[in-house]
Image 1 (cartoon, one colour):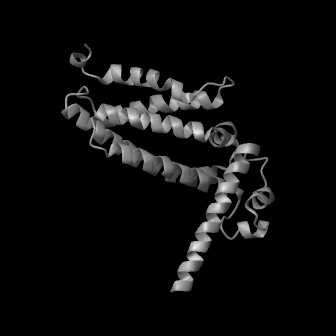
Image 2 (tube, rainbow, N blue to C red; image 1 turned 180 degrees about the horizontal axis):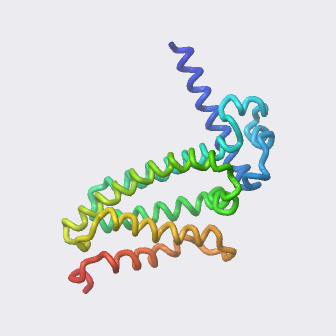
Image 3 (cartoon, rainbow, N blue to C red; image 1 turned 60 degrees about the horizontal axis):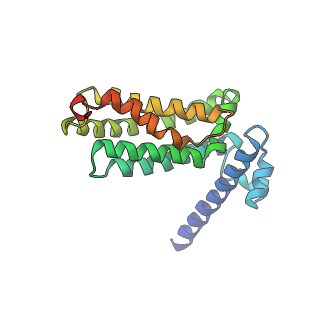
Length: 208
């Protein structure tokens, strides 16, 4: 039993080392320019060893996307679960999302710039996993917005529609930032996003 546990820990540790190395290589070289042998060298593994953990370069890349999605979801869910006002939680979640994208810009730009060239079967498998996680997040966000409506902070609108609207605004700013040739901090758009969202959602009595 102890030997099995040790092997499992070693397996997970090696897998993590490969993913971290792959993230750096993909960010520097792009998906299509990167080879498995380059990732193996960066991770200090033999190329053949990589295939014990990942079926292909595409599998490795989309595993990274999936794990990065899990990472931001954990941060966001923790913030949404706090016992502060709905608006305060929305503000904190927005900052978390924008900061996370800034920290991982080079990595996510790969998918934005090269995504149309990925094999559809790979994208569909990955897209389904990420979509399911996004649906869970949207429903949690909608619950927080519903609490804000009950507390009189927000207009009595459909909370699910409002959650989709919020993320739609956020994602449009993120996408523009990712493809922009102009260099500017994404976090600088936080106030604009909040202004657009809250002035359409905040009750008029609160605007004094």
